[in-house]
Amino acid sequence: MASHNEITESLQAFAEEYSNNKRLKIMNKDWNRKILVLANDIESGHTLVLNEGELSFTEGNVENPDLTVISDSEILVDMFYGDITPAEPYLKGTLKIIGSEDDILRLDFISLLIWGD
Image: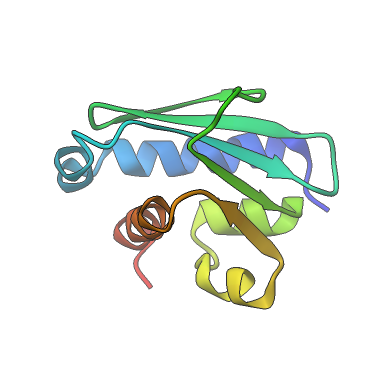
């Protein structure tokens, strides 16, 4: 089981890698979304905000997110550090993503561009 702080650190790494990728920032210039990241095994919630190509995150939950990502703390940490792709836990049912199919695909594509396959 990972801690809330470990999830925070993995999201910081994800946000830094995103910020260093000019291609992603241009690609997402018009994709403004609030993404809620919840651990289902510990008390932990974070919010990623994409606004005009810029990505930020805060600790805590946001109301009315466009996407909600739910999994156990270990999977979230591994996923946001790029140690695993979202595809495997999603197909196994250990990762749940609530949102439109287009938004889910865009989030998966962002991960792929940041961490590769």
